[in-house]
Amino acid sequence: MPEAAAHVASGKVREIYALDDERLLLVASDRISTFDVVLPTEIPDKGRVLTGLSGFWFARTRPLVANHLLGLRADGRSTECRRLAMLPLECVVRGYLSGSGWKDYRATGNVCGHALPAGLVESAQLPEPIFTPSTKAQEGHDENIDRARAVELVGEERFQEVERVSLELYRFASDYAAARGIVLADTKLEFGLDADGTLVLADEAFTPDSSRFWPAEEYTPGGPQPSFDKQFVRDYCESLGWEKTPPGPELPDEVVAGTRARYVEAFETLTGIGFDAYLADPEVVLR
Ligand code: Q0N
Image (cartoon, rainbow, N blue to C red; front, side):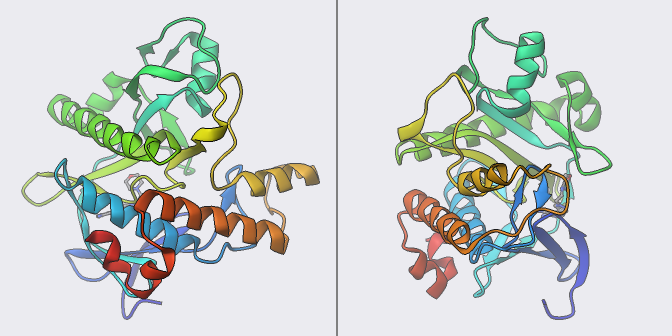
């Protein structure tokens, strides 16, 4: 538990504490969710992998946009960051047709107001990445919105800026990941404003919890793709015939070990840094 820090917010798998008026501490737990349910079994080091990957991307995308990162703590799971006025948007970029994007396309032929070519199959790569913002609805669920609604929430100028920056960030990270054998199918970014009104990238960035990671080697459009990190967990849960409502099942040791190995593999493949080196000195990912 962080020293004398007020708890600000809880996510399903992360906690936010106030350090002072200007700074927050984001702590990534080892909890894992599947089918929107947090499971009772943790994946050791998952929070460290996500924190290290976010730090790596924050350091490398700084030429594109400012970000909230101030430093990584020695525990490897805690991020000190600048406290911002968050924009009420989840900035989603999709390069492939999956999840709610695929559902919308199948039902209507477009995704959040973006007209798309006819005849695309599930998981198809889109002609161009598209910006499909959503809002956090009351009960934590994301609600897709169109451009007009997003402009109502943040204004025309700010909308154009977050759209441009989100697409630039996605192109940078997806090109980087593709060169290392990982398809970054889509991603969710969050931004805030600093006291000067400068746009600042916040939250986590390009982690398996905020993005769909697919192994490029197995990519086969025309159906759902295996997930780089959670596929063992999903397959195990499916094998039980669990109803996908809480409580979720406990995971057996081999599913935990296999899943941990996949997280560590994603970290090492993308960063080119050994996970042991990260544990010894988390800020190695920033250099
Ligand atoms: C913050 N969340 C996650 C926005 C909030 N750097 C920051 N400064 C102030 N607040 C936050 C951060 C960060 N990161 C982030 N909560 C608070 C939840 N989102 C959900 C969508 O709306």
